[in-house]
Image (cartoon, each protein chain N blue to C red):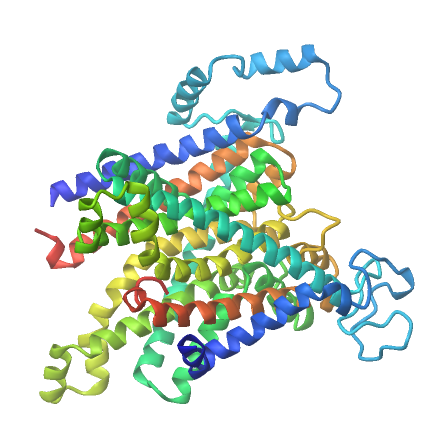
Length: 304
Length: 284
């Protein structure tokens, strides 16, 4: 058990190091930050000065070591847009993103489990057809379009909810629903097929033969086993939610990390882009670590 | 022929194939079908709503945008960009991923360990964020966009192919090829590759849908396909400012994305179930 935990922990650290390396490679090898930062027509002397002040005149290896050292203490440099450390800018926005992603995750799993349950329970009926149709469409609907359609219907036409921004509970409903739709569709499809597979197993037949009621059979006997793949999936879904947050936040003017990354790309404020991407990736890795450990705890076969 | 009779038996797959064919036909025949050039402006028809009347000035089946450009024509031409970019990235990502997977699985040992760790690490980076970081560095252009989308995609092929190769490596026909002295290239391409193509096709189809969504997301954020090329994501982003007065600007491009992704998903699900039953539960 301790060995398993240690390996997983080590893998997580390795993954974060890898993410930081990818960010470094993207920033230093693929583009010249100096040429992007200075206006067109800047003199060679200006270019050289800025390059030296950013440490870009050193060897690539030295730059990499320096980058790792600074990232290790959370220093991504100063955001010239906000005139503050990039990490501070990102961390300030983090609670809003986490709240949005968390509400969306809860909604997605709740809708997904109910949808998958209904489809498996009423197999071959209109109920299964409709839930699976909705799930298929949900999986094909781009997040940004769904957000706009929600705004058009609930904010512009019906005027029930605000079009964006933050404030009360009413502000989080549309962004969270938008973000949750794709995810809940995936959960519903997975849970349905997982339930159907579990239901064909011998222990279910035995329970049925003993006269266990259908509802009890589903909820008590089948669901715990069928829900295990869904738990694994939550790890993957966290990535979808954090990535999707970039778009959802932009549409609904939600002041989270995703929106600040997009703004930073527009203004070429790279330190914020890097800090934001690393922080969100680290959260994704942490969620997957937690899911892995939970899985080990919940599945007795993996405990040895 | 067996393939097509199986295709016809599945209602979902037929629907998917039909929708996709309509879009592909639209993309190919865009210059013939489109009533206007995608970039042609006509200020008389500015923001005119959808109308079935073809004779009236400034009228269009799916309406006109803020510059009087025909939304229907732009969607047709946009499908060219969207489908071409998605197809190119799936092919590029597929070739790289299959190559890496073949090498990694066949070579084994330390190179395999290292490659698989790289795959794990890259999968630890949410794809959207990876794309954002890279595009921010290299700048948006069609070529860069294809490269970035392929970059988010190769890992899936590499993993599947490597797994298949490991399973095949010790089978008799590979061992006998070894014995008669076939060189590794010949074994990899002649004997192993044909046997891993089915799962690769399944992954490629599902990746096509994912890549279309990611491309239009990036274009929506303004860092994907750049004007003057019409792209569905970009059209949506422009239509967003007119959401309360001209609903058709954002609605129709979004509907197009949804239909294409839905059709590719339907086909992909069916292919997975038909060609590769083992994968059925692996990816939903």
